[in-house]
Length: 79
Length: 141
Image (cartoon, rainbow over the protein chains, first blue to last red):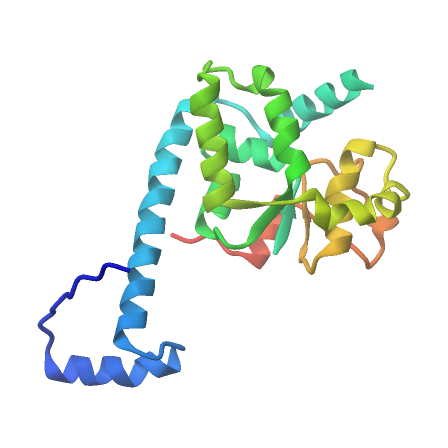
């Protein structure tokens, strides 16, 4: 794996508090937390992008009962 | 985990309402049998009112599977299909019921309470309305 080193500046007290909380949260190292936080952040951004894409599919005025009827209709026609 | 029916999946795709808010706010909670996604794809001409190209539509559906609603492979629920068929009159519902019998879950979320009847399922499977799901997973601001 090609790795890049990232250096942060952080208030000492905040870092101490962070280190104390890290293990309680289930992370062994700062690195492990950082990698997990990046993955979560990127997934969150991806989700937001997909929600934007879904706008292209939207049909105004549809309600639960209309959708239920649509699915029931195609199922009954199949039989 | 909550199992979602085809009609709820379709509401997630087509409407920007409560259903989408619940699922988008809890992306690790919802699963659906692969069958429901196949059924949606088979009938895409009926609901793809805005005429998206198949390639774009396929990409959106794949993204939904990857990031919002996990599609569960038939290998997981197929062994439970015969048992599930005894609990419904509609064969199209059996993959959803079979999935509920095969994995730990909080219930089936559906808009179709005619076919998914709590009195038939007893305590084995819980049928959830949208209100029930909101009680379990309150809407986030």
